Image (tube, rainbow, N blue to C red; front, side, top):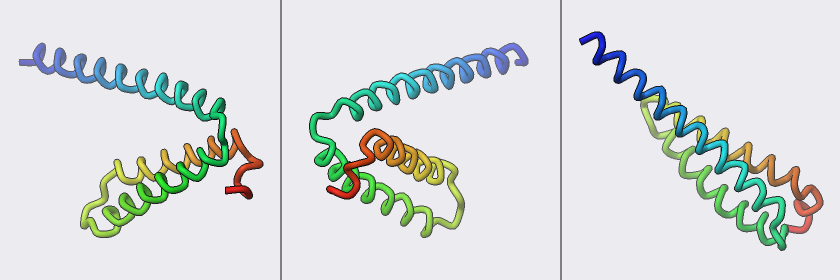
Amino acid sequence: MEQLNEQWMTAVVDALSDLQAARVAQGAVLEALVASHPSPVLLMRCWDRLSSSLVATVSQHKASSTMAKPIEAYTLEQLAAWTDRMERCFPQVRGQS
């Protein structure tokens, strides 16, 4: 039984490591796409619409839930982090959008 638990934990750790590596790689690809976008103003407008809708949905779920879910706070943090990244890539765009 102990060996089975150990194998299970190893499999979970491996799966989480794979997910983390994929997340890092996808983040790098997304940042490259953002930085090279041909229309920063359009990109920021689209991001503002998309992210504000997601933030509103997650915030509503968070407010109406009786039990705190870490994924909701994490989602809000990640959306804010991507907004910051985009604003760093295109600081001049914020006033134009």
